[in-house]
Length: 310
Image (cartoon, rainbow, N blue to C red; front, side, top):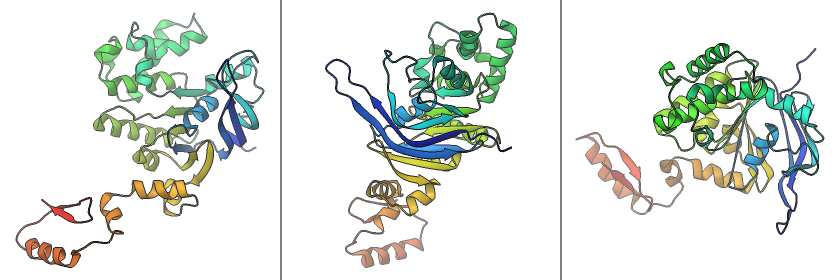
C-alpha cells in the first residue's frame, strides 16, 4: 500500500471574509500541487502574493474551528495534509494536523516567550498538549533538539534576550521540531539573521531534507534556500500560481512574465550586463588584456555596462 501523500492541494482558494468596515479579500486562487512524503516544496513570490497565508493554512494554524471564529476560509477547492482534509476540518481534526506539522512563523525568533528559559520555550508545545508530561523527559527532548539545530547545551538555561538573533531563530526551529512532526512549514527561516547563521540554517534544512519520511514547505525569497533545501518550488503572484517545478528549471524556462522578471533579477550582475549594449567594449577589452599580463584583476560590472577592475 502506497503511503499517504504529505500534502495534496487541489484548486485551492482562500478568502478572508469581510469584518466590520473591511471588505473581504481573496488571498489565494486556484493553487494546486502534490507533495509526496520525503519531498520539500519551496514557495516564493512578491509581498502580498499569499505565501504566508498558504503556509498558515497548511500548518493548520489559522483556519477557524467554528463559523463564528475569525480567520481565513477555504472558499474553493481543497487542501489535505497527511490525509486530513482542511476545508471542513473540525477542532479535533485541526489538533491532529498541528501535532504532525511543525510551524516556524515569520520572525520566529520574536515569538519566543521572553520570561521562559530556552528549555521551557522548546518544550512548550509538549506541555500545551500534556501538562503532566515528565519534566525530566521533556528536558532530555529539549537537549536533543538543541543538538539537532547545532546549539550548545549551555544555552538550555539561558533566556531569549541573552542569545543572538541567529541563536533565537534556531531555538524557534527546535521548538517547531520538538513534537517530531512529519512535516515542517517554515516561513522565511533565514530572514533577519547574519550570513554565517543563514548558511547554518540552510545546511540544517538540507539535512532534514535527507530524511526519507520528512517533508517540508519552505517559504523563502532566498535563492540559496530554494536551491539547496527544496525539491520543487511554487511561484505565486497575486495569490495565483505562475510557476511550478525545480527552481532552476522554473527560472531557466519561465512561462509567465512575472517569473521571467524574477529570473532576470536573480541573475548575477555580470550575467545581466552581458545582454546590454556596451559602448567602447572593444577598447576596454584591449586595455584589460594589456593589464592582465602584469597582474591578476577582479571585475564587477557597473550600471552603465562597463567593467570596473580592482
